[in-house]
Amino acid sequence: MKSSLLEISYLIGSVTFILGLKMMGNPKTARKGNLIAAGGMILAILGTIFLFEKHDHMGVVDTSFVVPGMVYGLIFGAIGLGTVVGWLTAKRVQMTKMPELVSMFNGMGGACAALIGLMEYQHYLGETGALSAIIAGMVIGSVSFSGSVIAYLKLNGTMKKPLRLPQYNILNTVVMISVVAFGAWVVYASPDNMTILYALFFAALIYGILFTIPIGGADMPVVSSLLNSFTGLAAAFGGFLYDNKIMLTGGILVGSAGTLLTLIMCKAMNRPLSNAIFGAFPGGGATAEREIAGNIKDINISDTAVLMNYSKKVVIVPGYGLAVAQAQHVIHELEMILEERGVSVKYAIHPVAGRMPGHMNVLLAESNVSYDKLVEMEDINPEFSSTDVVLVVGANDVVNPAAHNDPASPIYGMPILDVENAAHIIVNKRSMSAGYAGIENELFFNPKTSMLFGDAKDVLAKLVTELKSL
Amino acid sequence: MENILNLISEHREMIYFVVLSVFVGVEVIGGVPTVLHTPLMSGANAIHGVVIVGAIYVMLNVDPTNIAALILGFLAVLLGTLKCSGRVCGN
Image (cartoon, rainbow over all chains, first blue to last red; front, top):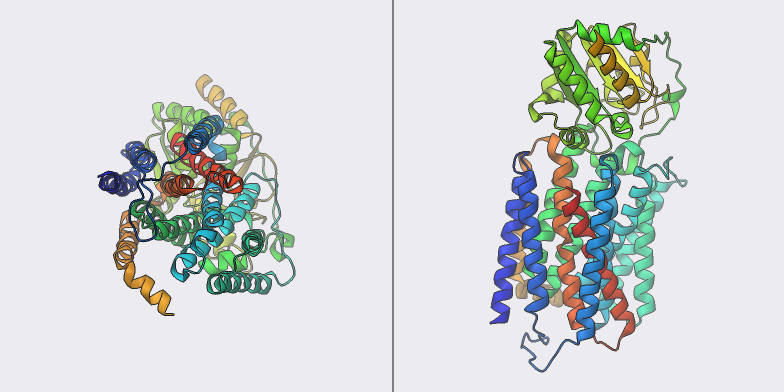
Protein backbone atom coordinates (compact mmCIF):
# COMPACT_ATOMS: atom_id res chain seq x y z
CA MET A 1 0.00 0.00 0.00
CA LYS A 2 2.59 2.50 1.15
CA SER A 3 4.96 1.53 -1.66
CA SER A 4 2.31 1.99 -4.31
CA LEU A 5 1.42 5.41 -2.93
CA LEU A 6 5.09 6.31 -2.99
CA GLU A 7 5.38 5.17 -6.60
CA ILE A 8 2.39 7.34 -7.47
CA SER A 9 3.87 10.38 -5.74
CA TYR A 10 7.08 9.81 -7.74
CA LEU A 11 5.10 9.49 -10.94
CA ILE A 12 3.33 12.78 -10.28
CA GLY A 13 6.66 14.34 -9.37
CA SER A 14 8.27 13.21 -12.62
CA VAL A 15 5.39 14.62 -14.64
CA THR A 16 5.64 17.98 -12.85
CA PHE A 17 9.37 18.11 -13.64
CA ILE A 18 8.75 17.68 -17.34
CA LEU A 19 5.84 20.11 -17.35
CA GLY A 20 7.75 22.61 -15.25
CA LEU A 21 10.83 22.47 -17.45
CA LYS A 22 8.66 22.87 -20.52
CA MET A 23 6.92 25.91 -19.02
CA MET A 24 10.19 27.50 -18.01
CA GLY A 25 10.94 27.67 -21.71
CA ASN A 26 8.42 30.47 -22.15
CA PRO A 27 8.64 33.85 -20.41
CA LYS A 28 4.93 33.96 -19.69
CA THR A 29 4.75 30.64 -17.93
CA ALA A 30 8.27 30.44 -16.48
CA ARG A 31 7.31 31.38 -12.95
CA LYS A 32 4.39 28.99 -12.91
CA GLY A 33 6.57 26.22 -14.29
CA ASN A 34 9.01 26.77 -11.50
CA LEU A 35 6.26 26.47 -8.91
CA ILE A 36 4.86 23.32 -10.48
CA ALA A 37 8.24 21.62 -10.44
CA ALA A 38 8.78 22.76 -6.87
CA GLY A 39 5.41 21.30 -5.88
CA GLY A 40 6.38 17.98 -7.43
CA MET A 41 9.66 18.07 -5.55
CA ILE A 42 7.94 18.69 -2.22
CA LEU A 43 5.51 15.83 -2.91
CA ALA A 44 8.41 13.50 -3.66
CA ILE A 45 10.28 14.56 -0.53
CA LEU A 46 7.26 14.16 1.74
CA GLY A 47 6.44 10.84 0.11
CA THR A 48 9.97 9.57 0.68
CA ILE A 49 9.86 10.51 4.34
CA PHE A 50 6.37 9.36 5.26
CA LEU A 51 5.83 6.40 2.96
CA PHE A 52 9.17 4.81 3.65
CA GLU A 53 9.37 1.05 4.02
CA LYS A 54 12.57 -0.81 4.53
CA HIS A 55 13.27 -3.37 1.84
CA ASP A 56 15.88 -6.05 2.08
CA HIS A 57 18.00 -6.87 -0.92
CA MET A 58 15.34 -9.16 -2.36
CA GLY A 59 12.80 -6.35 -2.28
CA VAL A 60 10.80 -7.85 0.58
CA VAL A 61 9.37 -5.36 3.04
CA ASP A 62 10.92 -5.60 6.48
CA THR A 63 8.02 -4.68 8.76
CA SER A 64 10.03 -5.01 11.96
CA PHE A 65 12.25 -2.11 10.96
CA VAL A 66 11.40 1.14 12.67
CA VAL A 67 13.23 4.31 11.78
CA PRO A 68 14.46 5.83 15.06
CA GLY A 69 13.02 9.22 15.95
CA MET A 70 16.49 10.66 16.09
CA VAL A 71 16.96 10.00 12.39
CA TYR A 72 13.70 11.77 11.60
CA GLY A 73 14.88 14.62 13.79
CA LEU A 74 18.11 14.89 11.83
CA ILE A 75 16.28 14.80 8.51
CA PHE A 76 13.79 17.48 9.48
CA GLY A 77 16.55 19.51 11.10
CA ALA A 78 18.61 19.38 7.91
CA ILE A 79 15.61 20.24 5.75
CA GLY A 80 14.59 23.12 8.01
CA LEU A 81 18.07 24.55 8.21
CA GLY A 82 18.64 24.10 4.48
CA THR A 83 15.37 25.80 3.59
CA VAL A 84 16.00 28.82 5.79
CA VAL A 85 19.61 29.30 4.70
CA GLY A 86 18.84 28.66 1.03
CA TRP A 87 15.89 31.01 1.11
CA LEU A 88 17.81 33.79 2.82
CA THR A 89 20.76 33.46 0.47
CA ALA A 90 18.55 33.56 -2.60
CA LYS A 91 16.55 36.52 -1.32
CA ARG A 92 19.58 38.55 -0.47
CA VAL A 93 21.48 37.91 -3.64
CA GLN A 94 21.41 40.46 -6.42
CA MET A 95 20.64 39.63 -10.00
CA THR A 96 24.27 40.21 -10.95
CA LYS A 97 25.23 37.38 -8.65
CA MET A 98 22.81 34.95 -10.20
CA PRO A 99 25.42 33.01 -12.21
CA GLU A 100 27.59 32.54 -9.11
CA LEU A 101 24.59 31.43 -7.15
CA VAL A 102 23.59 28.88 -9.75
CA SER A 103 27.11 27.55 -9.66
CA MET A 104 27.24 27.38 -5.89
CA PHE A 105 23.93 25.58 -5.54
CA ASN A 106 24.94 23.25 -8.31
CA GLY A 107 28.03 22.37 -6.32
CA MET A 108 25.86 21.51 -3.34
CA GLY A 109 23.88 19.04 -5.43
CA GLY A 110 27.12 17.44 -6.54
CA ALA A 111 28.33 17.22 -2.95
CA CYS A 112 25.04 15.65 -1.91
CA ALA A 113 25.42 12.96 -4.57
CA ALA A 114 29.03 12.34 -3.53
CA LEU A 115 28.08 11.95 0.14
CA ILE A 116 25.41 9.41 -0.77
CA GLY A 117 28.12 7.41 -2.51
CA LEU A 118 30.40 7.59 0.51
CA MET A 119 27.65 6.32 2.80
CA GLU A 120 26.32 3.58 0.63
CA TYR A 121 29.53 2.00 -0.55
CA GLN A 122 29.93 -0.50 2.28
CA HIS A 123 26.35 -1.73 1.98
CA TYR A 124 26.89 -2.95 -1.53
CA LEU A 125 30.34 -4.55 -1.35
CA GLY A 126 30.77 -7.24 -3.94
CA GLU A 127 27.77 -6.26 -6.03
CA THR A 128 29.44 -5.08 -9.19
CA GLY A 129 26.33 -3.54 -10.71
CA ALA A 130 25.28 -1.50 -7.71
CA LEU A 131 28.86 -0.52 -6.99
CA SER A 132 29.36 0.87 -10.47
CA ALA A 133 26.32 3.10 -9.95
CA ILE A 134 27.61 4.21 -6.54
CA ILE A 135 31.13 4.90 -7.68
CA ALA A 136 30.03 6.66 -10.87
CA GLY A 137 27.61 8.84 -8.90
CA MET A 138 30.22 9.63 -6.30
CA VAL A 139 32.98 10.49 -8.76
CA ILE A 140 30.76 12.64 -10.96
CA GLY A 141 29.25 14.33 -7.91
CA SER A 142 32.69 15.16 -6.50
CA VAL A 143 34.01 16.50 -9.79
CA SER A 144 30.91 18.60 -10.14
CA PHE A 145 31.25 19.86 -6.57
CA SER A 146 34.86 21.00 -6.67
CA GLY A 147 34.44 22.25 -10.24
CA SER A 148 31.43 24.33 -9.22
CA VAL A 149 33.28 25.83 -6.29
CA ILE A 150 36.06 26.96 -8.62
CA ALA A 151 33.45 28.22 -11.10
CA TYR A 152 31.88 30.17 -8.25
CA LEU A 153 35.19 31.74 -7.29
CA LYS A 154 35.85 32.67 -10.89
CA LEU A 155 32.44 34.09 -11.54
CA ASN A 156 32.51 36.30 -8.48
CA GLY A 157 35.96 37.53 -9.38
CA THR A 158 37.94 36.07 -6.48
CA MET A 159 39.93 34.01 -8.90
CA LYS A 160 40.60 36.23 -11.86
CA LYS A 161 43.21 34.77 -14.13
CA PRO A 162 42.86 31.31 -15.55
CA LEU A 163 45.61 29.30 -13.92
CA ARG A 164 47.44 27.01 -16.29
CA LEU A 165 49.85 24.42 -15.11
CA PRO A 166 52.42 23.45 -17.71
CA GLN A 167 50.97 20.97 -20.19
CA TYR A 168 47.65 21.21 -18.41
CA ASN A 169 45.83 19.48 -21.24
CA ILE A 170 47.94 16.36 -20.98
CA LEU A 171 48.01 16.56 -17.19
CA ASN A 172 44.23 16.82 -16.99
CA THR A 173 43.72 13.96 -19.37
CA VAL A 174 46.12 11.79 -17.40
CA VAL A 175 44.40 12.66 -14.12
CA MET A 176 41.00 11.98 -15.64
CA ILE A 177 42.06 8.60 -16.95
CA SER A 178 43.61 7.72 -13.60
CA VAL A 179 40.46 8.68 -11.69
CA VAL A 180 38.34 6.59 -14.04
CA ALA A 181 40.76 3.65 -13.80
CA PHE A 182 40.91 3.96 -10.02
CA GLY A 183 37.10 4.01 -9.87
CA ALA A 184 36.86 0.97 -12.14
CA TRP A 185 39.35 -0.87 -9.97
CA VAL A 186 37.38 -0.05 -6.81
CA VAL A 187 34.24 -1.42 -8.44
CA TYR A 188 36.06 -4.54 -9.59
CA ALA A 189 38.04 -5.29 -6.43
CA SER A 190 35.50 -3.75 -4.04
CA PRO A 191 37.99 -3.44 -1.17
CA ASP A 192 36.37 -3.30 2.25
CA ASN A 193 38.43 -0.28 3.17
CA MET A 194 36.98 3.18 3.50
CA THR A 195 40.40 4.83 3.19
CA ILE A 196 40.59 3.73 -0.41
CA LEU A 197 37.13 5.11 -1.05
CA TYR A 198 38.08 8.44 0.51
CA ALA A 199 41.21 8.48 -1.64
CA LEU A 200 39.02 8.09 -4.71
CA PHE A 201 36.73 10.83 -3.44
CA PHE A 202 39.65 13.25 -3.04
CA ALA A 203 41.15 12.26 -6.38
CA ALA A 204 37.81 13.15 -8.00
CA LEU A 205 37.72 16.47 -6.14
CA ILE A 206 41.20 17.28 -7.39
CA TYR A 207 40.23 16.43 -10.92
CA GLY A 208 37.26 18.81 -10.63
CA ILE A 209 39.63 21.59 -9.65
CA LEU A 210 42.16 20.82 -12.37
CA PHE A 211 39.36 20.64 -14.92
CA THR A 212 38.01 24.08 -14.08
CA ILE A 213 41.01 26.27 -13.21
CA PRO A 214 42.49 26.64 -16.70
CA ILE A 215 39.19 27.74 -18.20
CA GLY A 216 38.97 31.41 -19.08
CA GLY A 217 36.32 33.75 -17.76
CA ALA A 218 34.36 34.03 -20.96
CA ASP A 219 33.91 30.28 -21.11
CA MET A 220 32.70 29.95 -17.55
CA PRO A 221 28.98 29.95 -18.43
CA VAL A 222 29.55 26.95 -20.65
CA VAL A 223 31.36 25.17 -17.86
CA SER A 224 28.67 25.92 -15.29
CA SER A 225 26.11 24.52 -17.63
CA LEU A 226 28.22 21.43 -18.24
CA LEU A 227 28.73 20.89 -14.50
CA ASN A 228 25.00 21.31 -14.08
CA SER A 229 24.37 18.41 -16.39
CA PHE A 230 27.04 16.39 -14.57
CA THR A 231 25.18 16.81 -11.33
CA GLY A 232 22.05 15.64 -13.08
CA LEU A 233 23.91 12.50 -14.10
CA ALA A 234 25.11 11.91 -10.56
CA ALA A 235 21.51 12.10 -9.33
CA ALA A 236 20.45 9.68 -12.05
CA PHE A 237 23.01 7.12 -10.88
CA GLY A 238 21.44 7.33 -7.45
CA GLY A 239 18.07 6.61 -9.02
CA PHE A 240 19.52 3.60 -10.75
CA LEU A 241 20.87 2.27 -7.50
CA TYR A 242 17.63 2.54 -5.54
CA ASP A 243 15.31 1.79 -8.41
CA ASN A 244 14.05 5.26 -7.68
CA LYS A 245 12.25 6.56 -10.75
CA ILE A 246 12.00 10.18 -9.79
CA MET A 247 15.71 10.56 -9.24
CA LEU A 248 16.27 8.87 -12.54
CA THR A 249 13.84 11.05 -14.49
CA GLY A 250 14.91 14.26 -12.77
CA GLY A 251 18.59 13.49 -13.16
CA ILE A 252 18.51 12.36 -16.76
CA LEU A 253 16.17 15.17 -17.75
CA VAL A 254 18.60 17.71 -16.40
CA GLY A 255 21.56 15.79 -17.76
CA SER A 256 20.27 15.77 -21.32
CA ALA A 257 18.76 19.24 -21.17
CA GLY A 258 21.98 20.58 -19.65
CA THR A 259 24.13 18.95 -22.28
CA LEU A 260 22.01 20.39 -25.05
CA LEU A 261 22.06 23.80 -23.39
CA THR A 262 25.84 23.61 -23.19
CA LEU A 263 26.09 22.80 -26.88
CA ILE A 264 23.73 25.65 -27.80
CA MET A 265 25.86 28.07 -25.80
CA CYS A 266 29.01 26.87 -27.49
CA LYS A 267 27.35 27.40 -30.82
CA ALA A 268 26.40 30.94 -29.81
CA MET A 269 30.05 31.61 -29.12
CA ASN A 270 31.14 29.73 -32.21
CA ARG A 271 33.44 27.51 -30.21
CA PRO A 272 33.43 23.75 -30.20
CA LEU A 273 32.93 22.35 -26.70
CA SER A 274 36.35 20.74 -26.70
CA ASN A 275 37.83 24.12 -27.48
CA ALA A 276 36.05 25.81 -24.60
CA ILE A 277 37.25 23.14 -22.21
CA PHE A 278 40.74 22.40 -23.44
CA GLY A 279 41.69 25.41 -25.52
CA ALA A 280 40.54 28.23 -23.25
CA PHE A 281 40.88 31.82 -24.31
CA PRO A 282 44.56 32.70 -24.36
CA GLY A 283 43.49 35.51 -22.05
CA GLY A 284 45.61 38.45 -22.98
CA GLY A 285 48.32 36.68 -25.01
CA ALA A 286 49.51 38.07 -28.31
CA THR A 287 46.49 40.16 -29.24
CA ALA A 288 46.43 42.18 -26.08
CA GLU A 289 49.78 43.59 -27.00
CA ARG A 290 48.70 44.48 -30.49
CA GLU A 291 48.59 48.27 -30.76
CA ILE A 292 45.36 49.64 -32.09
CA ALA A 293 45.86 52.84 -34.02
CA GLY A 294 43.45 55.70 -33.57
CA ASN A 295 42.12 58.05 -30.97
CA ILE A 296 39.57 57.76 -28.26
CA LYS A 297 36.86 60.40 -28.35
CA ASP A 298 34.99 61.49 -25.26
CA ILE A 299 31.42 62.71 -25.14
CA ASN A 300 29.63 64.43 -22.27
CA ILE A 301 26.19 63.80 -20.83
CA SER A 302 24.37 66.74 -22.39
CA ASP A 303 25.65 66.03 -25.89
CA THR A 304 24.58 62.41 -25.49
CA ALA A 305 21.14 63.49 -24.32
CA VAL A 306 20.69 65.82 -27.28
CA LEU A 307 21.91 63.19 -29.71
CA MET A 308 19.51 60.59 -28.37
CA ASN A 309 16.62 62.99 -28.08
CA TYR A 310 16.75 63.80 -31.77
CA SER A 311 17.23 60.28 -33.04
CA LYS A 312 14.59 58.09 -34.56
CA LYS A 313 15.96 54.82 -33.47
CA VAL A 314 18.14 53.90 -30.51
CA VAL A 315 19.48 50.46 -29.74
CA ILE A 316 20.80 49.69 -26.29
CA VAL A 317 23.43 46.97 -25.90
CA PRO A 318 23.49 45.88 -22.27
CA GLY A 319 26.40 43.96 -20.81
CA TYR A 320 27.80 42.81 -17.53
CA GLY A 321 28.68 46.41 -16.57
CA LEU A 322 24.97 47.19 -16.48
CA ALA A 323 24.39 44.32 -14.12
CA VAL A 324 27.30 45.26 -11.87
CA ALA A 325 26.10 48.85 -11.60
CA GLN A 326 22.52 47.66 -10.96
CA ALA A 327 21.45 50.06 -13.67
CA GLN A 328 18.55 48.01 -15.02
CA HIS A 329 15.85 50.25 -13.54
CA VAL A 330 17.35 53.52 -14.65
CA ILE A 331 17.92 52.19 -18.16
CA HIS A 332 14.26 51.29 -18.31
CA GLU A 333 13.44 54.85 -17.27
CA LEU A 334 15.67 56.16 -20.06
CA GLU A 335 13.91 53.87 -22.51
CA MET A 336 10.47 55.12 -21.43
CA ILE A 337 11.43 58.80 -21.73
CA LEU A 338 12.83 58.27 -25.21
CA GLU A 339 9.75 56.31 -26.24
CA GLU A 340 7.54 59.15 -25.04
CA ARG A 341 9.46 61.47 -27.30
CA GLY A 342 8.80 59.18 -30.25
CA VAL A 343 12.20 57.51 -30.38
CA SER A 344 12.06 53.79 -31.03
CA VAL A 345 14.16 51.95 -28.44
CA LYS A 346 15.24 48.33 -28.53
CA TYR A 347 17.66 46.22 -26.57
CA ALA A 348 20.12 44.09 -28.49
CA ILE A 349 20.80 40.90 -26.59
CA HIS A 350 23.89 38.91 -27.41
CA PRO A 351 23.44 35.24 -26.51
CA VAL A 352 26.32 35.36 -24.04
CA ALA A 353 25.97 38.94 -22.78
CA GLY A 354 26.67 39.07 -19.08
CA ARG A 355 28.12 36.03 -17.44
CA MET A 356 25.47 33.57 -18.51
CA PRO A 357 23.21 33.20 -21.55
CA GLY A 358 20.00 35.05 -20.90
CA HIS A 359 21.51 36.95 -17.98
CA MET A 360 20.49 40.30 -19.48
CA ASN A 361 16.93 39.19 -20.05
CA VAL A 362 16.43 38.18 -16.48
CA LEU A 363 17.98 41.42 -15.35
CA LEU A 364 15.89 43.63 -17.61
CA ALA A 365 12.72 41.68 -16.96
CA GLU A 366 13.30 42.44 -13.29
CA SER A 367 12.83 46.14 -14.03
CA ASN A 368 9.76 45.39 -16.16
CA VAL A 369 11.27 45.95 -19.58
CA SER A 370 8.81 44.27 -21.91
CA TYR A 371 10.01 41.07 -23.52
CA ASP A 372 9.32 42.22 -27.08
CA LYS A 373 11.82 45.04 -26.66
CA LEU A 374 14.57 42.51 -26.18
CA VAL A 375 15.82 41.49 -29.58
CA GLU A 376 18.13 38.58 -30.18
CA MET A 377 21.36 38.99 -32.07
CA GLU A 378 20.31 37.50 -35.42
CA ASP A 379 17.22 39.70 -35.55
CA ILE A 380 18.85 42.95 -34.49
CA ASN A 381 22.03 42.76 -36.58
CA PRO A 382 20.37 43.74 -39.90
CA GLU A 383 18.76 46.69 -38.10
CA PHE A 384 21.96 48.43 -37.02
CA SER A 385 22.47 50.10 -40.38
CA SER A 386 19.19 51.98 -39.91
CA THR A 387 19.96 52.85 -36.29
CA ASP A 388 20.89 56.39 -35.31
CA VAL A 389 22.46 55.77 -31.93
CA VAL A 390 23.74 52.62 -30.33
CA LEU A 391 24.28 52.90 -26.60
CA VAL A 392 26.63 50.21 -25.33
CA VAL A 393 26.34 49.91 -21.58
CA GLY A 394 29.02 47.84 -19.93
CA ALA A 395 29.38 45.41 -22.81
CA ASN A 396 32.71 44.81 -24.47
CA ASP A 397 33.63 41.50 -26.06
CA VAL A 398 30.21 40.99 -27.64
CA VAL A 399 30.67 44.15 -29.73
CA ASN A 400 34.35 43.69 -30.52
CA PRO A 401 34.85 43.81 -34.30
CA ALA A 402 38.02 41.76 -33.90
CA ALA A 403 35.69 38.77 -33.96
CA HIS A 404 35.10 39.59 -37.63
CA ASN A 405 38.38 40.95 -38.87
CA ASP A 406 41.29 39.79 -36.75
CA PRO A 407 42.05 36.11 -37.30
CA ALA A 408 44.68 36.31 -34.55
CA SER A 409 42.14 37.35 -31.97
CA PRO A 410 41.01 34.70 -29.52
CA ILE A 411 37.39 35.63 -30.14
CA TYR A 412 37.77 35.48 -33.92
CA GLY A 413 34.71 33.82 -35.43
CA MET A 414 32.42 34.50 -32.51
CA PRO A 415 29.19 36.05 -33.77
CA ILE A 416 28.91 39.60 -32.43
CA LEU A 417 26.49 42.51 -32.48
CA ASP A 418 27.43 44.59 -35.50
CA VAL A 419 27.06 47.93 -33.76
CA GLU A 420 29.65 49.58 -36.00
CA ASN A 421 27.01 49.75 -38.76
CA ALA A 422 25.04 52.34 -36.81
CA ALA A 423 25.44 56.09 -37.37
CA HIS A 424 26.68 56.85 -33.85
CA ILE A 425 28.03 54.58 -31.21
CA ILE A 426 28.18 55.68 -27.61
CA VAL A 427 30.04 53.38 -25.27
CA ASN A 428 29.56 53.66 -21.55
CA LYS A 429 32.40 52.09 -19.59
CA ARG A 430 34.01 52.74 -16.29
CA SER A 431 37.51 52.82 -17.70
CA MET A 432 39.49 51.70 -20.71
CA SER A 433 40.18 48.27 -19.25
CA ALA A 434 39.74 45.21 -21.43
CA GLY A 435 36.66 42.99 -21.33
CA TYR A 436 36.21 39.62 -19.71
CA ALA A 437 38.10 37.85 -22.45
CA GLY A 438 41.03 40.17 -21.70
CA ILE A 439 41.41 41.69 -25.14
CA GLU A 440 41.44 45.20 -26.59
CA ASN A 441 38.42 46.46 -28.45
CA GLU A 442 39.04 48.42 -31.63
CA LEU A 443 35.43 49.57 -31.64
CA PHE A 444 36.43 52.22 -29.11
CA PHE A 445 38.87 53.66 -31.63
CA ASN A 446 36.28 53.85 -34.41
CA PRO A 447 35.71 57.46 -35.57
CA LYS A 448 31.96 56.95 -35.11
CA THR A 449 32.44 55.92 -31.51
CA SER A 450 32.28 58.26 -28.53
CA MET A 451 33.16 57.15 -25.04
CA LEU A 452 30.97 58.09 -22.10
CA PHE A 453 33.06 57.20 -19.08
CA GLY A 454 31.56 56.55 -15.66
CA ASP A 455 29.57 54.14 -13.59
CA ALA A 456 26.57 52.97 -15.64
CA LYS A 457 23.96 53.80 -13.02
CA ASP A 458 25.42 57.24 -12.39
CA VAL A 459 25.78 58.15 -16.02
CA LEU A 460 22.34 56.87 -16.98
CA ALA A 461 20.69 58.72 -14.10
CA LYS A 462 22.33 61.96 -15.22
CA LEU A 463 21.28 61.22 -18.77
CA VAL A 464 17.68 60.78 -17.65
CA THR A 465 17.73 64.12 -15.79
CA GLU A 466 19.29 65.83 -18.79
CA LEU A 467 16.69 64.35 -21.13
CA LYS A 468 13.85 65.47 -18.89
CA SER A 469 15.08 69.04 -19.01
CA LEU A 470 15.25 69.11 -22.80
CA MET B 1 31.23 -8.86 -17.38
CA GLU B 2 28.41 -11.26 -16.65
CA ASN B 3 27.57 -9.11 -13.67
CA ILE B 4 27.18 -6.06 -15.86
CA LEU B 5 25.00 -7.92 -18.34
CA ASN B 6 22.85 -9.17 -15.49
CA LEU B 7 22.54 -5.68 -14.20
CA ILE B 8 21.32 -4.50 -17.56
CA SER B 9 18.70 -7.17 -17.94
CA GLU B 10 17.57 -6.74 -14.35
CA HIS B 11 17.16 -3.04 -14.85
CA ARG B 12 15.90 -2.99 -18.40
CA GLU B 13 12.88 -1.01 -17.32
CA MET B 14 15.15 1.63 -15.85
CA ILE B 15 17.22 1.68 -19.00
CA TYR B 16 14.12 2.40 -21.06
CA PHE B 17 13.48 5.20 -18.63
CA VAL B 18 16.92 6.64 -19.17
CA VAL B 19 16.68 6.52 -22.92
CA LEU B 20 13.21 8.05 -23.05
CA SER B 21 14.10 10.73 -20.50
CA VAL B 22 17.05 11.77 -22.63
CA PHE B 23 14.71 12.37 -25.53
CA VAL B 24 12.23 14.23 -23.37
CA GLY B 25 15.01 16.47 -22.04
CA VAL B 26 16.29 17.28 -25.51
CA GLU B 27 12.77 17.83 -26.81
CA VAL B 28 11.81 20.17 -24.00
CA ILE B 29 14.91 22.34 -24.32
CA GLY B 30 15.21 22.15 -28.09
CA GLY B 31 12.96 25.03 -29.06
CA VAL B 32 13.82 27.44 -26.29
CA PRO B 33 15.23 30.81 -27.38
CA THR B 34 18.67 31.73 -26.01
CA VAL B 35 17.15 34.60 -24.07
CA LEU B 36 15.61 32.16 -21.63
CA HIS B 37 18.64 30.08 -20.92
CA THR B 38 19.35 31.62 -17.54
CA PRO B 39 15.94 30.94 -16.02
CA LEU B 40 16.00 27.54 -17.62
CA MET B 41 19.38 26.64 -16.24
CA SER B 42 18.30 27.74 -12.84
CA GLY B 43 15.11 25.71 -13.16
CA ALA B 44 17.00 22.65 -14.28
CA ASN B 45 19.26 23.21 -11.34
CA ALA B 46 16.33 23.03 -8.96
CA ILE B 47 15.09 19.84 -10.57
CA HIS B 48 18.21 17.83 -10.06
CA GLY B 49 17.91 18.84 -6.46
CA VAL B 50 15.88 15.65 -6.56
CA VAL B 51 19.10 14.06 -5.39
CA ILE B 52 17.79 14.98 -1.93
CA VAL B 53 15.27 12.15 -2.28
CA GLY B 54 18.22 9.80 -2.42
CA ALA B 55 19.83 11.46 0.56
CA ILE B 56 16.66 11.08 2.63
CA TYR B 57 16.30 7.48 1.56
CA VAL B 58 19.83 6.68 2.64
CA MET B 59 19.26 8.50 5.89
CA LEU B 60 16.15 6.43 6.63
CA ASN B 61 18.11 3.24 6.08
CA VAL B 62 21.07 4.27 8.11
CA ASP B 63 22.22 2.38 11.16
CA PRO B 64 21.56 4.85 14.02
CA THR B 65 24.70 3.79 15.87
CA ASN B 66 26.93 4.73 12.97
CA ILE B 67 27.76 8.33 13.84
CA ALA B 68 29.88 8.98 10.76
CA ALA B 69 27.05 7.89 8.48
CA LEU B 70 24.59 10.05 10.40
CA ILE B 71 26.79 13.10 10.02
CA LEU B 72 27.35 12.49 6.31
CA GLY B 73 23.63 11.91 5.82
CA PHE B 74 22.73 15.06 7.68
CA LEU B 75 25.12 17.02 5.48
CA ALA B 76 23.74 15.39 2.34
CA VAL B 77 20.15 16.25 3.21
CA LEU B 78 21.20 19.76 4.23
CA LEU B 79 23.07 20.39 0.97
CA GLY B 80 20.25 18.94 -1.09
CA THR B 81 17.67 21.16 0.59
CA LEU B 82 19.88 24.23 0.31
CA LYS B 83 20.07 23.63 -3.37
CA CYS B 84 16.33 23.17 -3.92
CA SER B 85 15.16 25.99 -1.71
CA GLY B 86 17.84 28.36 -2.93
CA ARG B 87 16.95 27.80 -6.53
CA VAL B 88 13.20 27.86 -6.19
CA CYS B 89 13.16 31.07 -4.18
CA GLY B 90 15.85 32.56 -6.38
CA ASN B 91 13.56 32.63 -9.36
